[in-house]
Amino acid sequence: MSYFNNIVQAISTLIDGMKVTMGYFVRPREYVTLQYPDEVWPVPSRNIGVGELDSYNTIRSKLTVDINDCIGCKACERACPVDCITIDAFRGGPDEDLGTTSNGTKIKLLVTDFTIDMSECMYCDLCVPPCPEDCIVMTPDYQFISNDNLKTDVTPEQRWRDRSLLIYQFSKVSEEERQRRKAEAKAAAAEKAAIMAAKKIAAEKAVAEAAEVNAEPAASASSSGEATETTSLASDSDPQVPSTAPEASNPETKVSYAIPLETIESSAPAEGDSDTPIAEPTESQNSTEDIEEKESENG
Image (cartoon, rainbow, N blue to C red; front, side):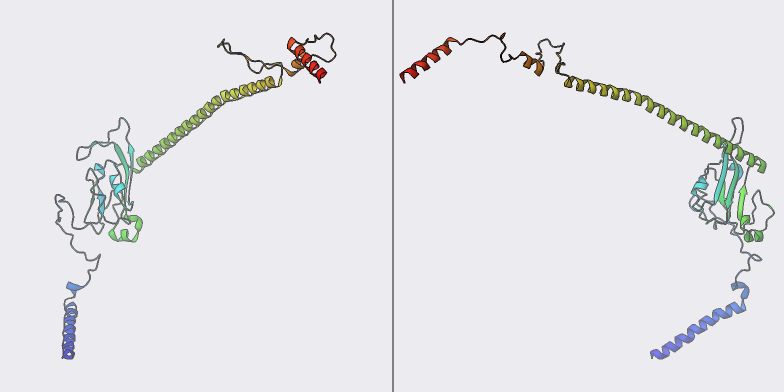
């Protein structure tokens, strides 16, 4: 019974597949692939809206920026995960008025170059929320037909054939002004580096001079220590110099002098010296001798 069921199921699935195939054969314009760029799907005209973000588009495609509202904070450049955004901004002069944004923010940095490389963009839309002035947006322009302010005569076909044409540049100043600002910034950076190098050399010189000044007292102290040690050694070897000197601060301190051996030997009496007085025996010595004589006679 299962054998016949398998046959019926195979025939029914074959009929279903042939229906799909015949539908493509009968109505080709409804099912075939759209022949881009000759034919394009219409761009959605409504926004899907996410909470309060009513400007969130259905699709995310080409990035664009309103350069007149850009303040050069580089928040979008730091948020980009693939580094496809590059911004060159320079501080204006003390008397230079750079204007204000549409939100009333005073512009303090002059943006000379705002570059977006759409050939590296991953369409993540992470660069749009950090912008404090809402000047960078991701448009639904998937054909990249909206041009920037530096390239206005490039067709979409030419852009897709040349990668360099997918790099969009925005600027508030002319090319000459931009090069001048870059040269001034480079010269200022070189001058600052030279000042820092001079300060470093001066600090190293001051440290070296301080080390030399500290080394002179140490050398004099070591030389005086060597002289003191030499004097003490000389006093120990000379017998005429007392080994211990009296302390003037304490009068009760007993002072002992080392008597030279030569002095002791010279003071001892020499043999056969007639001038030396001979000590006479005492009475105890005489009585002892008398007792010894009597004992010898009795014995």
